[in-house]
Image 1 (cartoon, rainbow, N blue to C red):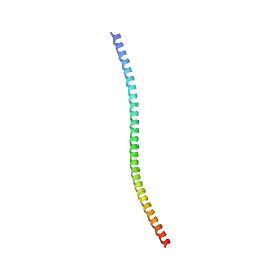
Image 2 (cartoon, rainbow, N blue to C red):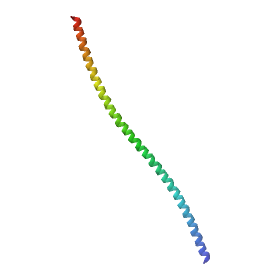
Image 3 (cartoon, rainbow, N blue to C red):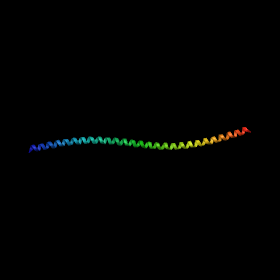
Length: 99
C-alpha cells in the first residue's frame, strides 16, 4: 500500500511539474502576445495621427487651391480690362494721328 501511495505521489508530482511547465510556456506566449498587441496599438495610433494630419493638410490645400483659383479668375479679368483699355487708347491714338 505504501508503494502504491508513493507511485501516486510520484505521478502527481510529475503531472504538477508538467502543468507548471505548461503554465510557464503559456505565460511566455501571453507576454509575447501582449507585447505584439501593444506594438500594434502604438502603430495604429501613429497611423491614425498620420491620417488626421494628411486630412488636415488636404483641407488646407483645398482651401488654398480655391483661393488661388479665385485669384487667377480676378487676374484674368484684370488682364481683359487692361486689354480693353489698351485697345481703347490705341484707337484714341489712331484717331489723334489721323486728324
